[in-house]
Image (tube, rainbow, N blue to C red):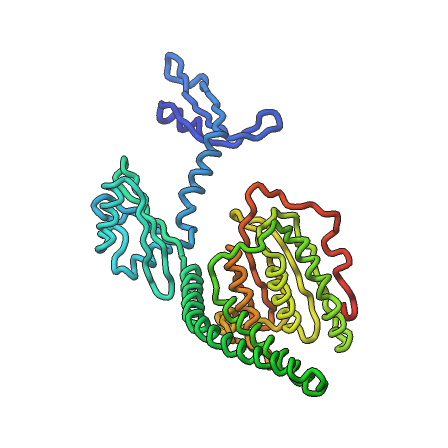
Length: 418
């Protein structure tokens, strides 16, 4: 067919075929010319075969790149300097419908101004647009020499919700902090007066054992009250406090904390005939962090006990560590009853608890302690699917971690009552 066309047209003809060099296939472009004798009869064909494999590979990549924006789940638009919409992928077309326009029409205000500003200044412009139930971050990227602007949208709905929740929680802590500071001052004064009177009575009644025992009980209650006041003040303090900070290997801290509280939960599990399994396979070598060991241990203990409480029939508590964006990330996951969205939103609020006992200060103190260490804490959970607490702490500059000869997971998984 190729040679027939060359014969009939009398011109150079080209086509593309898959051919073989030896046993190796390649993309070929034959180029043929029919050669005639003096009487006009075709006596031969001159054929040049060019290897166009590299060209075809580039063509495939280019087509893939051209296809990419259409597959993107985020909006992609291209707009001329006059504001005419040249291109919109599927997600972009949805945004245009909400704006009341379509391809080859002009963008509405204030989008036109942003296109003009991006081209005029030669730099990107970003703004947030709400298209319920979604929130998008739109970046206007100018291609000045070609006279158009590419608009890239990114769905930031979940980030916005998370930021709003963090802001709301910070506002709650600030409001409660103002209140508790005043209350704590007054309560401390009252407790100090009562404690002083108790000491005076104990001095005056040294020989009366029964009365002294009662006074000691009262004095113990005063100390408990003072501790509650201290904790109330502590969870509302969010500024970084580096008192008692040392370099900490988080892996060792996890292992030491588990060893510390193991006897308590082992006794509890054996009494109830249930099984807890501790999985440390995900605890990897990471850089060191700065922190107060006692406070970080309190954070771990609170989260661990909460996790165990959420597994009344037993289950698995898993730990994992990694490095991400200049931070050490610790994830603590359980296979417990999980939380609904409302509980997740309130889990770090002071005095919020789903238990029949306790004051609901444990997770508030965890939140405040992590913040004071310059870190962050979030929770992910589904009802009936367990929960995962995600903590991150800044890496100590120049730290390479502290290598210890212990195998994560070894000796950490007990059977009945473990």
